[in-house]
Length: 121
Image (cartoon, rainbow, N blue to C red; front, side, top):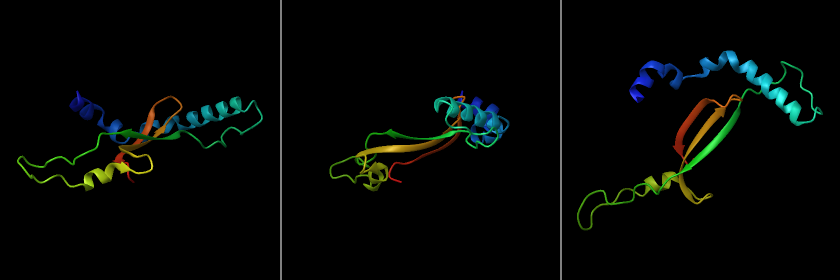
């Protein structure tokens, strides 16, 4: 299934901003109208002047502690490098994880995906 999606729709999966280009003005207008609704009409943005078409969403997926086990069998075997664990550990949140950043459009679709990246960065 994965191979079929890649061969048939790979151009949409790898670089899909061109696919959404014709809809960006509609997304901007939709967001402008919703902002006016939520502000009880106190804020007014003229049509065409609102330049927001999506929202950035940062996500961290927690993972188990990577690596650290024995790299080979036997007594006193070498262990994996501890740098693997350090690359995915964030001291502020005190967990290991992987980061993703997306741009979400008002229609609920993910317009752009960046990641995965180490949680430490």
